[in-house]
Image 1 (cartoon, rainbow, N blue to C red):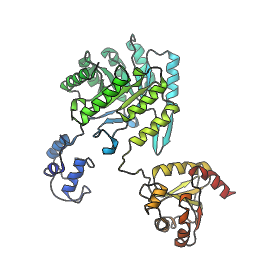
Image 2: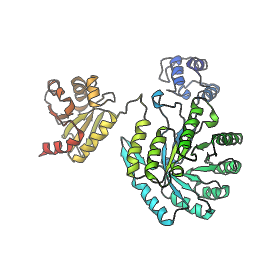
Image 3: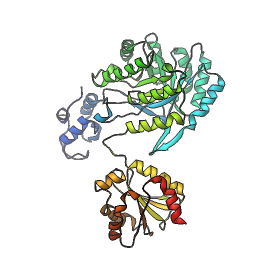
Image 4: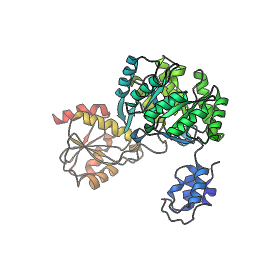
Length: 448
């Protein structure tokens, strides 16, 4: 059961040293209780107290890692059912399915298609992070291992869907260093599958014919001292799968039942095979409710663009504005004599405007003001993007570094032009377009 601030405070050294960044040990304790800080951030906490508090304050859902290097991903660690309560922690990962039932041409086509979706949005790389390699009925170890090796050639993290311990062992012998998930434990084979997973040092996926069987199997695996688990909550149909995903998460977070306190796999291929539109819709549903790994037959731009946008919107901290660092960002080979263009530090504004400025090809210095991570009109209305704040930033940070005295401001705050000219003598203030998409023509017309 989670501890409150007073209970945590009793175990602190009570030095009020401020080395953790908080003014007092009580303030630190309250932040730990809220989940805003970690116990380890106190440099004077004893090892016994850290061990005791870590166990007591650990999230009801276990944090699981799989993959290696830049393809290592974190699942679980969630503490709330709804984003507005606090924030979600570990974003779901999308997996593209391969199966031994596919012919060679289909496999090659899918392997070639997976890397095609790869782009950046608001500073985050968007691509299919996981390949789900399924062992179909009748496949032998050689066939499955060959498919696993082909999938490994993409350099993506993998989930191996295999319920035969011997076949799984043969496949893991080839790829265990990449730390895939082995998804195949059930009520009939959990002991053997657990042994295979523990020997290879990988996370084990568990399933059951219903939630009762899944619960009992997880409990049995925990008795075998295996708690590196994910739960495959995919049911016989869409309705059952949705119910499973919600009930497992609710049991873990609301009822604090740690037997169900593990990340989940949702396999949309099993409940909507061949229906790509339904799979995309289900992927959106389980992005919110509550898939940790979501398996689909394909992930092209048609599926990826809306899914990645949805995931990024849901899995950002609503209490922390998305900001970029204020400063000067030279673009298109700009130097100290190049035109200056300014806007706010809201990340979405920055990346949208930055893309249009780069597309124009015009050398310029992109100046980002500290506006509290708010959009142009919101920050202007709040007084954070004002003639005073802009002129102060220009005088302190820009004038010593830039010789050009032409500044383009967003068209939505054209009202600032007069005040800026008064507060920045020697500067020519130019009102830019209202929309970022108009910047290319605007800048090229200026250069004409």
